[in-house]
Image (tube, rainbow over all chains, first blue to last red; front, side, top):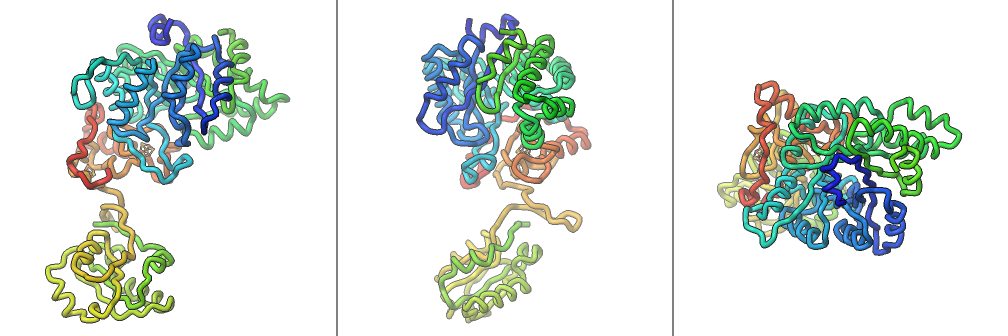
Length: 290
Length: 207
Ligand code: SF4
Ligand code: SF4
């Protein structure tokens, strides 16, 4: 069953994230993907994450799909104007890619090409609206396409939202985001508030997939708090990481506990490890969902 | 007001290979911002002389971007004719007008940053990106094209941390836009899907 069909069945979704290689060597990428074989419903492939230049996500999605994995291709607004966005989307469609996750994208200044021109010709709401047009057989300017697309678009969100971010999320949902992948969750109360808010702003709730970052150490928890927007690792989790004899196993246990609780709160989880997917299988088994 | 700031002196010196220099300041924005009025021109003169340049004259034009007659400027400042280069302490508008008249190279001493203003004695920058199609009213008079680092039109990017923009220490402008629209009773403006911008409205601008 395809990812988009699963979104409709109400089945609990499991996705995991992989970043393309920085260079042409694809063997490590393929062995990472192999770790996820028959564990996840789709593999997310990032688009120059944190504005660090890497291989095109379309190429990586194509490679992975050729090996039997279903993918979710990330697309940011940072690097392409509306011409490039559309031609890349049509190209992705030709390569069999159907699931697209749209996000604004970190500013070039955050990455390894600080002086690059930030594009942001369209914002994430406008890209969702563009995909709706492509799916209806028209381009951004309203010209008819020879052959329409069949994309399943998704959007991203933090779980703790300011009033103005809430308004933007509502626009994303109205523009057809059929799934939302959230920033990493460490606190199920704030996730539950987020779910209430989503119900308030949308008549038909999109599939909500909560982000999970398995912690590796107390230091990694503090790093997330200090450096990554939208993430708040609460003190009790930081304390557990500090006091653990084996922090990596404690991180696995914490992730598994979160997943068990999230099962009754939202519609799926998305694993974004700090380094690699060595522990992903173990986490999902400990959580009892695989 | 055009907001500009002085280039680092080393950079000015690196560009300026000529020896005999005439300095031109500007009596409008650059003077008000204290980057190109008489005191700054005189300071520049001293520094350049220390660096071995021959400053053969200087002036502060009433506005560098509005020159009715170059002949008049030359009559009042005959030393310009002996200069091998001009150093212009004005915004990009000023130096480009002057370069159009002069038949020697003109070098900028300032970096022009943005269009801003002065509000309650405080200089505010990045108020307008000169997009050619003003939509500032949709945002309560706070322009996201010039104040959001990603020029977003439909809301914030989610990268702000503790209210601060992802790229620097400034506050994410979207919270201010929300508060302003709330204050004037126009929050519904934020609900509207804002379409992609039409870049033909200003073919030569970057925003
Ligand atoms: S909308 Fe355009 S013209 Fe109006 S303030 Fe912003 S950049 Fe300037
Ligand atoms: S943090 Fe706010 S001001 Fe900065 S780029 Fe994002 S939306 Fe724009």
